[in-house]
Image 1: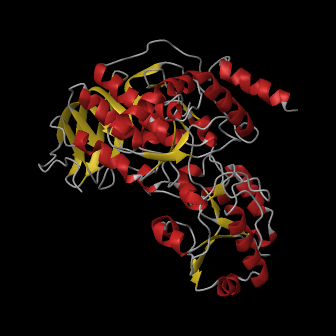
Image 2: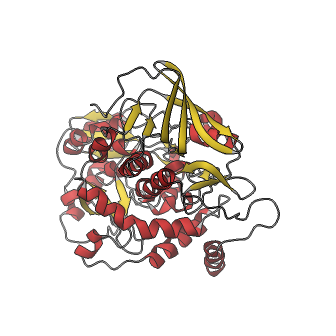
Image 3: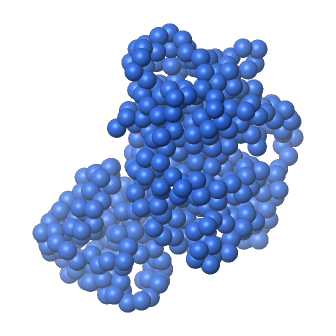
Length: 486
């Protein structure tokens, strides 16, 4: 597919108003917002299409006080969202050093409803809310009908006459002049190009999960070398370039292990252990899934789906770390994976019997996320997918102002440099809520692109790691939540 690719040689130098590095959710939104302001934009993308990880994902997005919630009579507000974020961050802080920016959390909460309006106006459709009562106290996480809708929704922006997109191109270094970021050096099909940005550079290159050498700086070796889910261009390029000009990285150790599986796939599956029985809420909190799997004999488990699901979600199954196995009957599948035949048959029959009721909570595991239409696991052949602990997302990135300017290690905004998406660290603590990664990228990416186009800056010096650290109100809430739980 074409997205306004420049067919003329890039030469050795380009000039524009705004450079956007990466075209995932944050990058797409930043390009659209900057282009809408009428400035010249250059988008740099390592792959051959826009969309980043989100087009390959399940596509769950969180919106606060959205029109979709209102249509279903769901009452939500920013304060409820902030309280949910504080609770989840307090839990994450048990195992990781956490720096949460309440200003960014609130900014996302206020602006996310507009993101919903923008996406739906562009043709993106959401089918239903995904209940996650342990994370979201109200239903606010919506499932997209097709993740590729995101890329299609923004294709017109990349075809705009004031947007030039360089595919197959990797950013290498930021260019600076007297402390201001003035552009970027990139390598592409035509060699090395220097791009000058009169307004600013937006870092939206994604996370660093596909770079084990970088992860090794923040994780134990055995985890850093573990598998990951997603595109292989999430190498931390933006993190390294921003760090080189003084950007302050936070939450880099928050790389929580999880059982690698798409949320869309897991909602259609049940998981069994070596005894052929279910052992946890398959769609529950990530850390609970890991704990449950590691507590099984041999630390082994399999996701079980039928032929309807295997065909519908073949791409997601193909992305799993270990190959799936298929058999014409449950009897043969049990023999293939080495679990008791009678137990597996009874487990699947029990699950199907539950789905045939109108109960909303699985009495065995407490699961509340059901297959679409409560469809049973009943159509042969059947597929078993090995469960593997790895990494799906990372949450570290730069501190930033309300204008999404990157903040340096001394607490001062870096002129000409903006960050959004997985390059932004202050919102990363909300990741365990679910749905804030893609929605956060679209929401704060839009604001970053607009700020870069308009030259919006924040000259206020904020607290830094030098001297006393002044906790935000959300940090205080986290501490209070933690103490209340003791």
